[in-house]
Length: 105
Image (cartoon, rainbow, N blue to C red; front, side, top):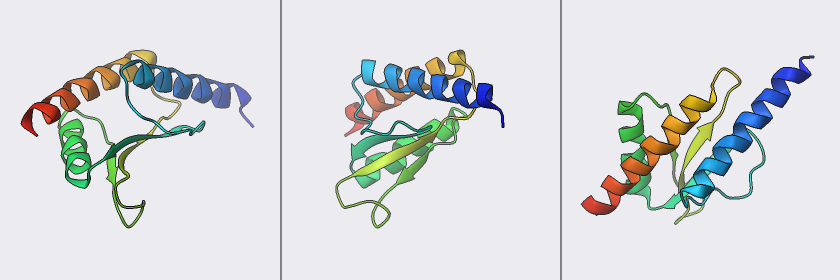
């Protein structure tokens, strides 16, 4: 009943996908507001999720048996109350966390 909100959500989701792809993240083929960030390793997904939570982002690590072995991921849900600045801060924070994760591995 609110097509403008749906269009806004679609635009926000597209923006985040673009930011994540630009940073080199593997995000699968989802076109919805739920965006997977494929990490593969269970422990890394859990650690990155915890670090993002410390930064104020409620992003969940999804691991087997919810997904096939070797395909652990973060599940990001974009909502219509977010803005471009928040999405950019998320992408930047994720990049920083992933860099720390690579260094500590």
